[in-house]
Image (tube, rainbow, N blue to C red; front, side):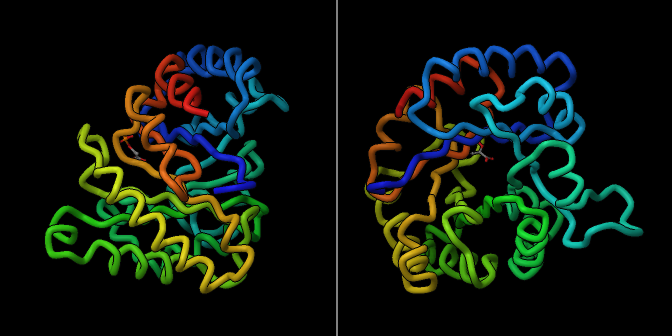
Length: 248
Ligand code: PEP
């Protein structure tokens, strides 16, 4: 999107022990030379403080992978947005399809988490995406626009919101939609954001996610209204992640 700086964000999911610091250091090293896009890694929360100490004010930002809607309290096992910010995150992934599936998160719950992220000063990276059955039924646009409407509260701007379009059937499968399908889905989401947020909706980044790798990044990132990538598996290794970032 003209005038919009792309974002390549890595979602480590439930992967990474202390040894992963070395991979992150290798990413940092290469990121210093090569800065066509904003870069971010969302490690498991156990690594946030450690990676934050290594990252300093360098070229790779850090994000969480989920947060609770409340500030603090009796919620065993959960983390608040304030805790993520305190640990060095500037963003948080919300409503990832694995959380919608594994934890039954609804769009209304995701919207409450987005409010929490904003309260803590974090950018919300809101994930949407249709299942294969929904696509086969011809409902992909309807499902994704419905999730977007339900998961994003009023008042979003390009600084507080990033959207990640991730077709569920493309996540971790090695399958990707055709360029034409990606173009159509991103363009419909752009229209939805503009209808709701006006001028601000023009600059909100819409990332593509689902089996992005160095070999397909350039083609996917060249599609209109694709403002970067959310990368799962290929974000675990510096070579792969920086190979994707090199698409910019
Ligand atoms: C993701 O889950 O955010 C993702 C895009 O995963 P992968 O790149 O492994 O398909």
